[in-house]
Image (tube, rainbow, N blue to C red; front, side, top):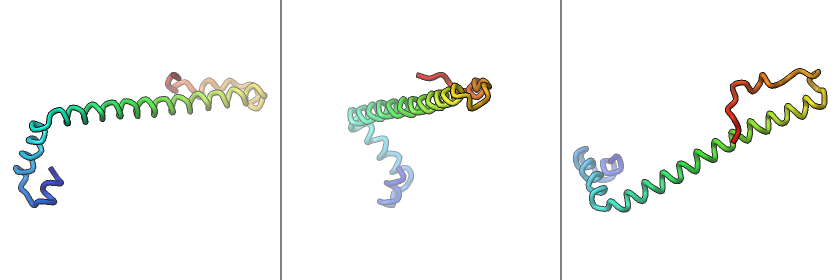
Amino acid sequence: MNATISTEGATGFDALSRSYSYVYQVPWHCLGYSTLALVYGAALVFFVGFMGSLVIYLSSWGIDQANSANMFDSRDPAFLYVKAPGSF
């Protein structure tokens, strides 16, 4: 709607009617684009969650490795990950 108003100098009602008429004229395109956006969004959400989980896992692993080398005077670093989400 913003593109219609800015490029053609149309009114708000004209922009609204054009945007809804596009949905009614080519419903399969709109459905396909919506499905594609949903699949792409789901893949991105999974990737971000996976990378966050990987960072938490690797940081926990690194602290455990440092703890096994007696760098922390055998203090238990588990309290650092009390509120961390579970890993995939």
